[in-house]
Length: 283
Ligand code: SAM
Image (tube, rainbow, N blue to C red):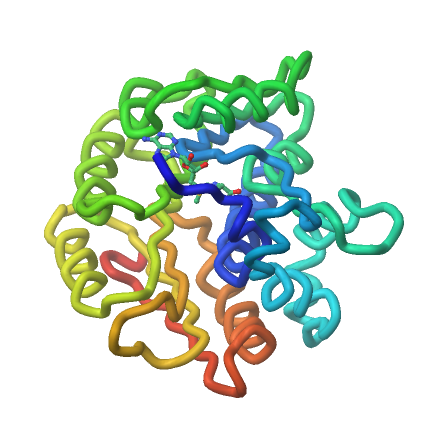
């Protein structure tokens, strides 16, 4: 396991992913019933933007750094507010030095009745995450393969909630594992919301992934993507994608406001683009 998220924390892909995540959690809080968030590839939860890793690869400067410096038009800013409040809350002095990863972001948004299960396989990262949430009765950190938890931990006893699957894509076959994992998870928890992250790097691989999802028979799948620039040869990361299964009925409309505004801020010299598309079954 070579992947270290500290090199990428707060980059454009984190920003888009974490904004979508926040909008889903905000929606879940509309009803008083408790929910659970399961984060299958959680990372360490809190990233020091002054660390060696972040300094060697300062991707956050073109992500959260640029978003905070530039801002968003009013409607998009309203939708981004809960996310940015958490980011600002981690940086009380006003200077951006710390970035909250997905488990910390989710935890900051939970109510007393809600729960978080965070899985992480890297031993150092799992230990860091356990230390971060030590003594927190609402959060369970588990040092385990997140792919196993995708079905072993479902359905949650709350019978309401969100599963975030955010693998590192360092090994071949991650797209196939996402399709397979979703199929198994959906078989056990069909009403859950699932958010699956994927990189925009090789268009053919993404097309095959989307075709496999379409063929899976799972209804209600939304595809949300943001690219910084057109694809390149040889392939390099040019954008970020998320499949949302059973999205809140508000999400597609919210993303039509958020994603173009983000593409304008984060895109590479005006070349940012977005896509919002139902893969299967709009309601
Ligand atoms: N979700 C995090 C966030 O948004 O802040 C970032 C996660 S990062 C993209 C992927 C993480 O998955 C890394 O911390 C890596 O150590 C971990 N990982 C890799 N393989 C795993 C597996 N099979 N099960 C659980 N975690 C895994």
